[in-house]
Amino acid sequence: MLAVMIPASALILVSAYHLRTIQREKAIEAVIQRDYQQVLAIAEKRIVERAYEMTEEARKQFPDMDHSDGLGTFLTTHPEIAHAFVWTGKGDLDFQSQSSRMSDPEFIGEGKKISWDLRNWFDEDSKEYISKLKKIEATEGRRVYMTDHWVPRGDKWQYQTLVLFVPQGSTPERPALSGFIYDTDYLKSTFFPQALNDVLPNQNPSDASHPQPAIMVLTGKDQSPLAASTCWDGGPPEVERAFESVFPGLILGINLHGTTIASISNRFLRSEFLILCALSLLMGGGMILTYRNVARELALAKLKSDFVSNVSHELRTPLALIRLYAETLELGRISNPGKQQEYYKIIRKESERLTSLINNILDFSRIESGKREYSFRETDVADLVRSTLDSYRFEIEQNGFEFEQKIDNNLPQLRVDREAIARSLLNLVNNAVKYSATEKYLGVHLYRNNSVVNLEVVDHGIGIAPKEQPKIFEKFYRVGDPLVHNTKGSGLGLSLVRHIVQAHGGEVAVESAPGRGSKFIITLPVQNLAAQPEEGVSA
Image 1 (cartoon, rainbow, N blue to C red):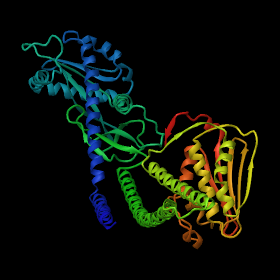
Image 2: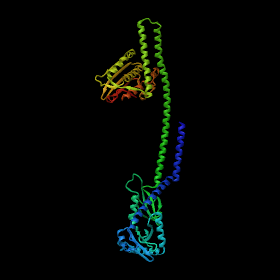
Image 3: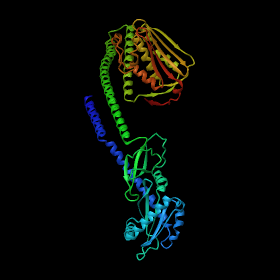
Image 4: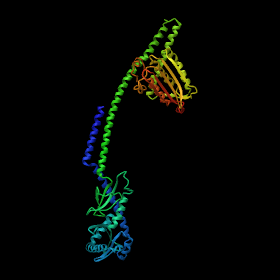
């Protein structure tokens, strides 16, 4: 036990220390945060791909540099775009804004400010922008450049996305730049919410069965939220990741709906500590069971030792008598025919006793090795019980027993192993004879009780204490009554009875009280036995 208990205890202590280290160093939080960073990287990639796909589609519908008069039509078909422009040379910038918003003085002022800024940028840095666009096309295969653009509205700065590209018709001799601006309102109310919900589909804020991740987009200038997925429940993000290329100045944030990383970590650690405690209790229980099993094995070893001693005596006694009477007859010392018949009868009786004991031992050996076989046949159980009792009647009467036999008529035939059932009956009868010291009564009753057939063996012997009754069907076990220990026996009889009866689909029970005799009841189910095969069955 120590060889098991010491390593197991050391393992539990090391595990507890390891969990405390994880708790102290916040290792669980670090792992979850690393996983969240990967989720945000995937989300950024999908959002960027969606933005490029949408922008490339709009670029293809953009008018070429010589037809800038089509900007109004372009803006009408793309309400998500606030401003569009074409620059075809120094001081030559065609700039238009969404006509549906021209009634807003703030929007008009914003457009004039952007137009002035773009004209100055392109007049001074057009070559740099065109070179950058060519490099992007050569390295990434994309024909647009997207960057951030901030505009003041009220007391806050609003984020916009500026898209630049080289329009159709542009040549090195006659360079041109085109582009448009996605407005804050579109990014905030349409683009980012749709993109985030595509990244995290099937979100349900009312589902509390498991933590659901939620992602938001916030601005880097003042950490104000721009858009969020369905399950965002407010509060600051627990993990952040800045956009690297498209949407510079914006940040992706993630948290869990209804919980936090710290709560998950604490719940995990609590669960692990509970599991560790449970394992400790199981180990303790295992040690107790191991101790009980060892004690039981020691007791069983003692029972086996007693069994060998008892069986040796049981074998020697009939063998000695058979040899004694056989030698006496062989030497011719008995001339009286009546006396000779008496000696022959004793030899036969002791041989039967020896045979019964050997059969019990052989049966027990076959049962222990799993090789005991039963041969089920259609059997008249009443006839089987009568013939078995007739063969033992002389023994019963010779010992001075009052014998009562009650066997009902019209009992159904059962599929049983005749020899096994007969041996079970004889074991019970033999016990009744051996352990009835004063009031010698033996009753055998066979009757049907609904769907079962009951075989009862009743005696008025020493009886069995209630605490002993659950143990008497165990192998080698013998009741602690002095009469039992003074009466030699193997301790196998009742164990064999139980195995035989259970192999027939039945049960064996006992009703007894000390000094008031015992009643053993074998119950054989009629219907179950009807389904047994005819040939030998291993049990």
